[in-house]
Length: 77
Image: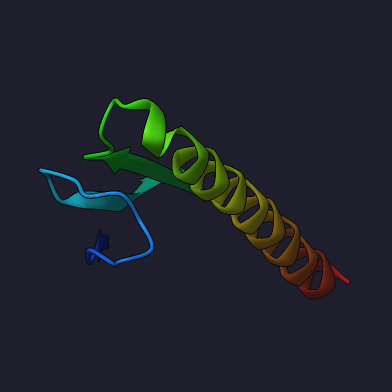
């Protein structure tokens, strides 16, 4: 799955598309979810936005992991 962020007036301008790719891999009895972000400009004015997005995805992936583990645990009972 790919998310492409559209330019908004509230963010600094960027010369590239900012993209998040979700890569799902199946390995034995588990699914591995990887998140690859690309296109963020390497400029100081983007540092705060990058950190906010990174923290947001970290929190979202942690919640997803807990949710899936709870669902799997309830099926084992």
